[in-house]
Length: 162
Length: 305
Image 1 (tube, each protein chain N blue to C red):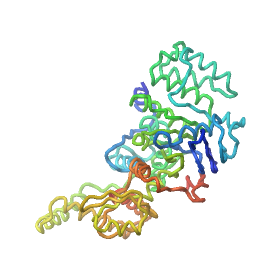
Image 2: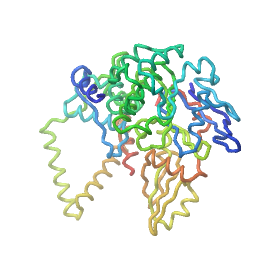
Image 3: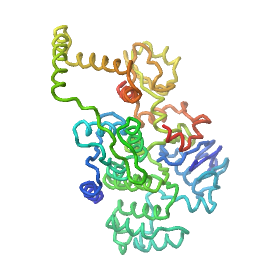
Image 4: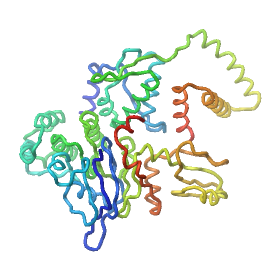
């Protein structure tokens, strides 16, 4: 009954192009899952500037989570400059994430493939490569990094520690 | 504003202290979970907060220093007792009529709309409703009073999973839309993980842990490492619970925060709310009580974060 209502509301009248879902097994804190889903939707083009994020009350009713969790996620998106709240209306997408064009991605792929071949030749298996890459990546963003970037890295780390 | 504030609160039944030396402050705007084993004093605490039981010792005030039982407290707090009691021989409509006439404030339209939305017919006797519908009826009557604080004693115990989700969705929506603060008691910690942002852990009639869930999780971690070093490490750290095998040991420790250094050779893992609560319940000697600064947490700091 409740679920049907949630769907019909989200389907047409809620006004947001996306709908959140939670992965209970991921171990990622709930608010961070919401932030990551918005970022993901921005990268894939499901969301663009001007689009409205789901209303707090709708998220709360459909996922049965604490409203403070949703507010925290939306504040985080505001801090990152990705969204802005409009009083009495809701939260709207303000900026898009840097998207790199396809040819550039192809250019960036090549040296990475070369590195992977070298890593394998040195005796690392897939898990070893992932571990090394993740650790270097984390160090890289920790050492330099503007405020927004660093926030993300620090948050990522707290739950990666385990 | 604190929705409930107690100082040395205690209740004695005969010679047994059901609750003693309870000093805490629950800030507004949270869904606070009152957690503990049977007989920990949860119901006693709630009954004293709403004025159904008189303290033997200490004081309790509600909604920013209002005495329990004052008109402001009676109007501002709605309480749903264990098993969502309603008069089984009255119809849903009669329950609405009764509640409206027993209270100074009652939002009749809200109550009607909610019951219609839930598909609960006004003419049906409460005794003929399903467990989930009866719980929703009790919750509707409580919320139609437009309270600032909603207190629920074991609201989920009798409900099936779908009814639990519907029930909690209603509670969360009232928090989001009307800014209602909530205090609920439960043993089922795992399912509170996503809804609770404030924890009050009672054990053996005393407050053992209290604080914002986020802060509590941030200052605890599990360290995994060689069992041989566990004892020397345990002497330097505040260990809540230690589990060890022949070679490997897990220590649930309290730290200064997520940036505390991890001892070399040990791995740090974050803890879940359930893990944290169970560890404390199994170690009655350990406690985390807020310092003076934590007690004074109010909305401004909350927003700043």
